[in-house]
Amino acid sequence: MKIKQIFITLLIALIIAMNLLCISVFADDKNQDEETTSDAANVKIYSEAGILMDAKTGKILYNKNAKEKKYPASTTKILTAIIVLENCKNLDEMATVDVDSINSVPSGYTVAALQVGEEISVKNLLQLLLVHSANDAANVLAKHVSGSIESFSDMMNAKAKEIGCENSHFVNPNGKHDPDHYSTAYDLSLIMNYCMKNETFRSFSSAKSCIIPATNKYDERIFTNSNELLVLDTRDVPTNYYYPYAIAGKTGYTAEAKNCLVSVAEKDGLQLICTVLGGIRTDEGLSARFCDTKQLFEYGYNTYTIRKLRQKGASAKQIEIPNATKETKDLDLLITNDIDVLIKQKNMYSKIEPVFELNDNLSAPINKGDVVGKIKYSIEGIDYSADLIASHDVEKNNILFFILELILIAGIIFAIYKLKFDKNPKNKNRRNHNSYNFNFIKFKNKK
Image 1 (cartoon, one colour):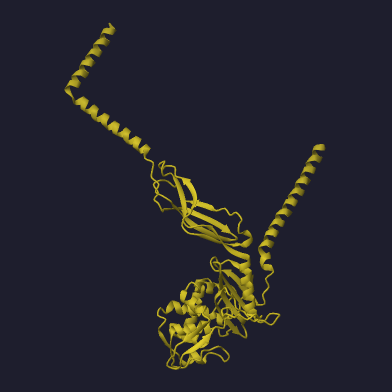
Image 2: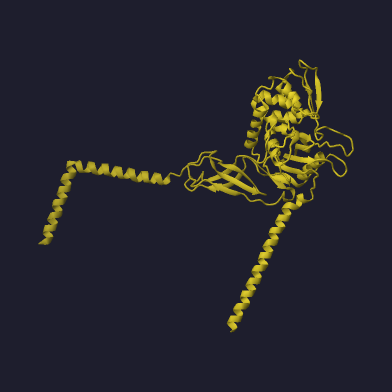
């Protein structure tokens, strides 16, 4: 009876301990989730959708309805620009303005007032597209590249899919409102990240203004950028939207899309992409798209930083090659490139251990510079890696082979000697004489 009571008591104690453990684990998981989201929880934007993305890794640092369908308005033009740049190798090519490119732009949309029959270079049209956001310039470029708006739209959708867009569809090159013309903050950020790898795009999308030389219809013209993040403003007023770290961007507006903005900023080696869609005004009556974008950039730069974990050419680890010579068996594994990681500032000096993945059955000989494995880090959901190469030549230890060679040579010498010995007549007589004496002795012993 006592044994039964003891057993029941132990069972109850075990159940209580397991429950406490589960509660503790759950609490730990909850705390980790809260820590992950708490940094961004205090960030509130007025735009209907927004995203902040690290350009290098694609890591999303802030997200509000980022994958929800929205009308992109003139932010569409960043995709138009990259398609033109990738399909017109000579930007000095001349395009001729046609009547439909002008007449198809609705009243109230931004135009450069291009004239029918005007001859203008692809370069200047791209400047009008990205700096002045000219909708007529977008139509002229689309027709110059593909012959029609429809075929150019097909190119846009194919390119968007290639870039990795998940929920976008385009029916025109300028963002003119159409129910079937939509994108997301996430997709537009992917497109901008892709475009920023093109130096010409970077140059045009970062310009504060552009000068269009005289054409057969106009004298020289000057246009300014509508992206107020880029335009230097020294006034100490709330409507000063200048952001010193902004390096590129594209605005957009239609009544249906409201105010939109795709921007890029860079500070201390950290390049961020911010997209806000569906913005109007803040509670103070300021532009939501500019205020939201500046707030998100500031959140990013105040929360995250770049940390150099490993330097190119440094030794990551030393290993011993088992079949190598004594002089070369200790091999340093050198890193092929810098490993710079995105990390929260509060974790700047925390210890981060790498994972080493070495090639199977590493053995001599190994040449200097041969890839012998990888070094890997996993930080906040992002993987970083670099190849590991041999620091020097590793020579094979041939002592066993040398011993076998000596034994083989000795065996060959002995066989040759024995063969010559047997062939010598004197040796034969001596051997026969010894045999006779041996037999005689045996016979004598028998008696």
